[in-house]
Image (cartoon, rainbow, N blue to C red; front, side, top):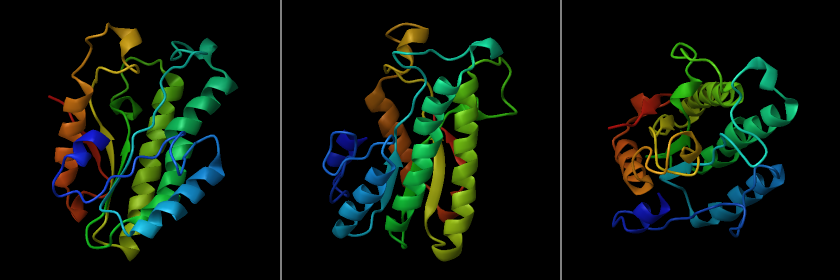
Length: 204
């Protein structure tokens, strides 16, 4: 997404924040989110803010297949990245949106849908994304009261060929990351205030 926006003529500047950037943002360090928001706000209001962090598996665990696989460690790690961190992004970065036309998007997942859950499993991931969608919806209601033109949404990019998806099929699963990023940015560019609080499933 940063690469796409860097080549977008209508985009005046792009700021990419991560654990090794300056300022840095690290979901394991709550203070870093407040500090990063304070640092970047000197550049003015933002028309677009995207949280693209997410966790499905790590070197220590894979998605749970059954109740017997549940553990505090995996639940806490997954919720910290997929839910708690993005919630604090909402807290600290939503006030930085341009009141004339500002969009904040959180990458979510269709597996967070309670109604659509037909296969079970993936407890931490499903629950963390369901909670993320609720936090986004609730924040959208609040923010709309003071900034009616801003838009807060959840995005599901579909299946993308990244390290997140690779263990479950093969290296060619899904579409290329640049294509998915372009598709999501195209959807974000067309959103209106009526879309705030929504969940958008981008797929081909």
